[in-house]
Amino acid sequence: MENHNHIVLKENTANPAPLGLLGFAMTTILLNIHNAGGFALGSTILAMGLTIGGISQVIAGIFEWKKNNTFGTTAFAAYGFFWISLVLVIMLPKMGYATAPDKDEMASYLALWGLFTLFMFIGTLRLNVALQLVFGTLTILFFLLAIGDFTENKDLKIFAGYEGIVCGLFAFYAAMAQVLNEVYDKTVLPLGIVKKK
Image 1 (spheres, rainbow, N blue to C red):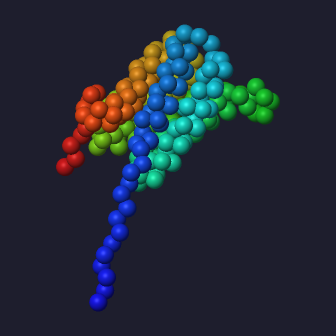
Image 2 (image 1 turned 180 degrees about the vertical axis):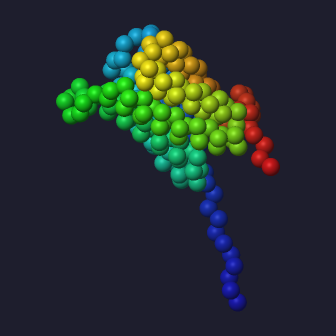
Image 3 (image 1 turned 45 degrees about the vertical axis):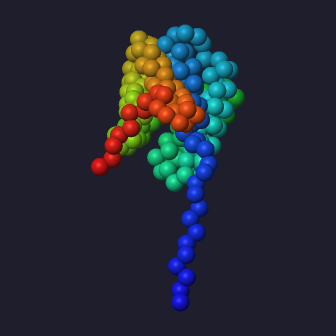
């Protein structure tokens, strides 16, 4: 007689999404304060881009993979590497390893990320309102920055900076909501979960 007993392993690792969202949020806010004219591009933005924006999001993406979350894996790993690539785009020319991108190249780089983000935004329509706000404003941000670079419109870049701060604040809210809701085992900050049919 065949034995049909199955062992089911329960997933009991922590939720990596708040770390990834926080890394995205804090780096996005800081960079866009610069874009809005708050201060010059300095080592704080580059350091944050490599560490909390880059490495922490890649780590969060790897752990989302362990949780069988394709959306989370794709989002966090991709945006983590975006931040690392952005730091390299800025630093490689300064170190003499490459030429600095011209306006067309930089606009293309940002537009490609905008296109990717647009498709990820479509995915959030099945998740929650908080993520819809993050990815919706991020899509707008990438396209605003791309158009700003392509047209060399400084006012548009400043406006994009303020819009980017809002995007970062939405991500910060989504991160803290998940942490506090889990800690208190109730809805402290609502995420606006979409009911799947």
